[in-house]
Image (cartoon, rainbow, N blue to C red; front, side, top):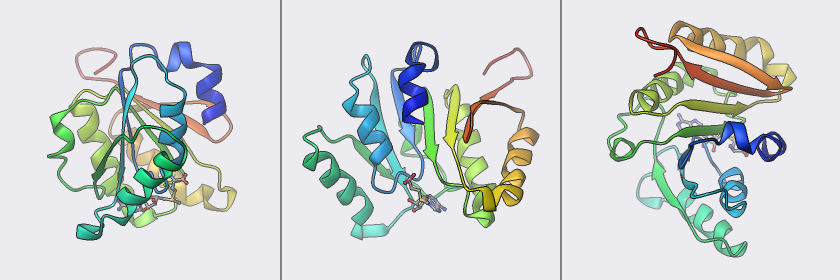
Length: 171
Ligand SMILES: C[S@@+](CC[C@H](N)C(=O)[O-])C[C@H]1O[C@@H](n2cnc3c(N)ncnc32)[C@H](O)[C@@H]1O
């Protein structure tokens, strides 16, 4: 993902001022995106709601600190849940890596992506490279297809989803 973005920054990040990462875990991808200092590109990490513990969020903040990178916002968001907090802002581009291992969550994941596009997101960029999960993962692609997402695969293990509206080519 990082290799593809750095090689295609001019096209993939064109007009993008904000990003959101789904299922960020350690925040490694967001940390790299932030460290690259792409023009006015502000990020937000998300992962499932771990309640008052907020261990995931604190771990991400710590990882940014250890790398001398200024922390970014973290939102606890379990897929499929209302996006109230997230709706305060529009995120131009959504990123996620390695999140298709939870087959039972595909419906909720698609629901969150649809909500983000309804709030103005234009692209969902996802990497996934687990050959033994390929068949199961097809279900996710079918669900995205049913929600009118257009899928491109610019390189192995990387997909870019955009969405066609009923009124025109892009939402
Ligand atoms: C295999 S990890 C990948 C982490 C990170 N993106 C990476 O590439 O290293 C999958 C991530 O999805 C998150 N996740 C799983 N189910 C979720 C759900 N229902 N809602 C939100 N996040 C979820 C997990 O907490 C975990 O951080």
